[in-house]
Length: 277
Ligand code: IPE
Ligand code: IPE
Ligand code: MG
Image (cartoon, rainbow, N blue to C red; front, side, top):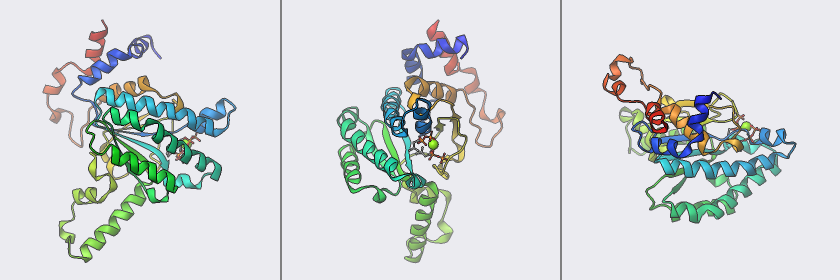
């Protein structure tokens, strides 16, 4: 890390203030929380210790998103492919999820967080499904951060499920094939209540999506960090958000088309540097 970067990351309160006032904050941040196993292996610990430590990162990141006004946070907690892992690891992850929801629910609710889930959740153990349902119901009226847990989730699974429902609705005469647009497809996906992710963060240096939000990620900015998930905390999230605010999202257009107005305004990074002077 260079000295100037160190200065920026040392002052988390300033980062928070600048991000809070930024017009360029992502509305929807999604994270592929990877590297728990390697974190534990590096310390000669069993893999499950990495998962346990990763829960602290979840707490930190959820709070940090809420504090700067990110509206949607989607966490990839368990993929549909993760069922193929050894049974004791899967059992541990399920019990961790259950205890996270039980322990954190009051605080999440007090902080106006709305909990949702995407994925094949009927494949989860009954007790986990129940606490999840309770958390969703209890927080359904909240209008702060929407925290979506992707559990037993696979983007291809969701697309295939949506296609089946679309086909059934065509057969029932509810939908005509001519009316099928890109937004119709989005409406049939489980993610229909959220905007597409603006920023997808992946920890542990892997540069792939691993079946996460494939349709929705069409124009997401990707941020990959070598940091392992259990080491990823609020300051790392804020660094990712600041990096995002510096990016030019062109959506196929040219830079010139995007207009001079945005360029004459001081950037978030410049405002942060001024605030720190
Ligand atoms: C991410 O960490 C957590 C889950 C996929 C549930 P990993 O368990 O994949 O950790 P690595 O990739 O083996 O280090
Ligand atoms: C992706 O991580 C899924 C989650 C973070 C829940 P994996 O560790 O399962 O991904 P691959 O198998 O390395 O692509
Ligand atoms: Mg992994």
